[in-house]
Amino acid sequence: MADRHAQLSFDGNEYDLPIVEPTIGNAGLTIAKLRADSGDVTYDPGFANTAGAQSTITYIDGAAGILQHRGYAIEDLAANATFLEVAYLLLVGKLPNKAEFEAWSEDVRMHTLLNEEMKRFFDAFPKRAHPMAILSSATNAISTFYEDYHDPSNAKAFDESAVRLLAKMPTIAAWAYKKSIGMPYSYPNNDLDYVENFLAMMFSLPTARYEVDPVIAKAVNVLFVLHADHEQNCSTATVRGVGSSQANLFASVGAGIDALWGPLHGGANQRVIEMLQSIVDDPDASAKSMIARAKDPNDPFRLMGFGHRVYKNYDPRARVLRSYADDVLAAVGIKDPLFDIAKELEQTALEDDYFVERKLFPNVDFYSGLIFRALDFPTRMFTVLFAMGRLPGWMAQWKEMTEDPSTRIMRPRQIYIGDIDKEYVPIEER
Image (cartoon, rainbow, N blue to C red; front, side):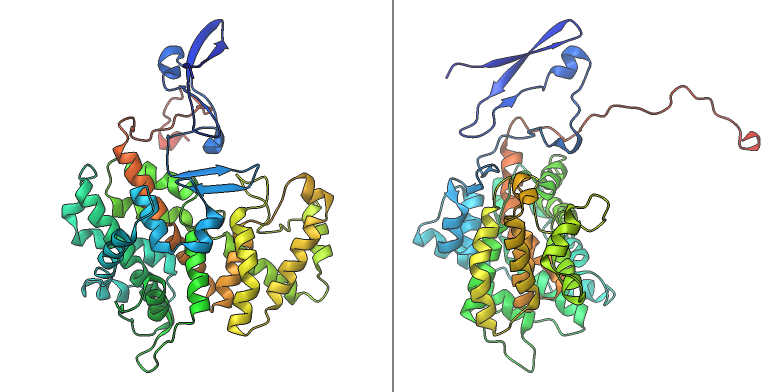
């Protein structure tokens, strides 16, 4: 295809905007020289219409409900791949063969331990500390043990940093949880695989060995796979933004964890659980009444877990989780009233013209919290689990950014609308 260009006409001047062609999806109108040529900038709150990078990692078609990693459909990966396979795919660019996967898994397995000095770090937090605060802080803290890995231009340093972060994140997460309940920390068991090891560290005690249920391990694996990457979302953009200053991988991922903590991002599944619990606790509430309240512009109630910034179709991750939910609840032997009301809400919404016309379908947060809850994870750990799944995506995006010669330090512009030319008034005269 010949090079294409768009023309922008403004204030009597014409500006040439080269087109960046995609493999599939949206083309990009390049405005990199617009400010230099015109003195003006574009205005795009939230950068919803602005591409800050060219990427080969993840493709999303929100209208069609498609999510692919390196060309593989998320449904295919969730059904067949282990989380470590998907991590390798994101970081290396291809699925590993058997020998590559065995070497990769062994490398991760051999770095699961935290330095013993980190115990004092965990001990210093108050018992009530949120696990996400500990997770972010610990991710930054372990960088102090690997200062030789801080150079973003060193490919070998990145590979070793990525393995260590991937290996140690389950240990950090489990220790954050143990700290919050006043229980002793559990050490990794390298005889177990990645997910089994995490579950054992979470739920074992010195007095009681934890036997991993394969159904539960499979469900957690699927949850991690579904969260592994999601293109340029808030936390990924944060990782790229911090990394663009040449901050090290640990610091950049720590910043991504902080961004994920927000209730509009990774904390959304916790808000779904809180909403469902409030409905169950209200004897006068029903799925139909909650749908009616959600449609009322004068009612502050919001139906959490429906709609998505990108998807204008059924979130493919939610579709996968919906199919697992019944199996998980059956495996753990519980009947959850929150799950019952969730299914009723979904069915009612999907039959309501208001939701259908606005394409407000269930998203991944609608079912992920219910499954985490069924697996006996406390609510405050939900976002931690999201971060564990998202880790390989953050690292792959950081790597891609640092290897891209067009990367510049992130520095958005603004349109100033404040006062000007005011004179200082001494404090006695104000």
